[in-house]
Image 1 (cartoon, one colour):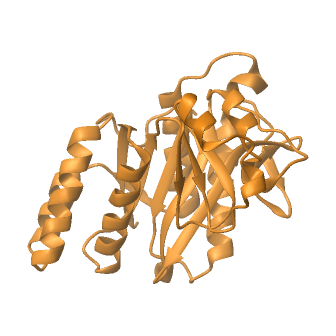
Image 2: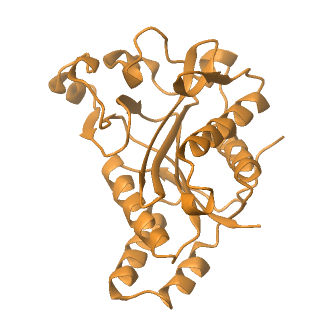
Length: 258
């Protein structure tokens, strides 16, 4: 069974996580790493995808700053979205050349991972075509936006476990005006531990993608170092440093109750 390197990080500033994704994507394209799955949180931030429209920002940049929300233009597809504490963000760095070069199938697989994790906790989650993402009765509980370059994916999904839903009122999430955003806590009427959901998501990632998650980053990077040129050795060092400073847990990646 193929392996996927699972990196569970804590709260990481958005631009730093974006740089980490770019480094990992370059290392994956060079064949130095297996597929990678980053899971983390962000401090409050609004990101503007390549298709964003100014009308979908419902507050001034000064108002966002006053709320403590950063705003960044990014290279993923899609429109405007929000990330913040209480939201589980996943960034799979996947080589689609090993998965039939099928971007649409990849998006549906990401949706299925989240649908499975949500159904584990009793939520009847599903799809709402033609919109990408995961929904509960036309309320959006998870957003998905990706970039694919040289068949390597970056960016990913944001699952609303218990974020500040007020912050979504400052934007038109994903450019969709007619359907509200929701969270696991709002739907269940009780809190759910973020780490519990992380374990469930990783278990479904393994099942849907047919991989075994591993967390032996030191061993993986050391093996890559023996095959890397000087530029990629530098990227490996940067990656290990970032992960070491933001590592959340060393629990086995298959954790999570069924």
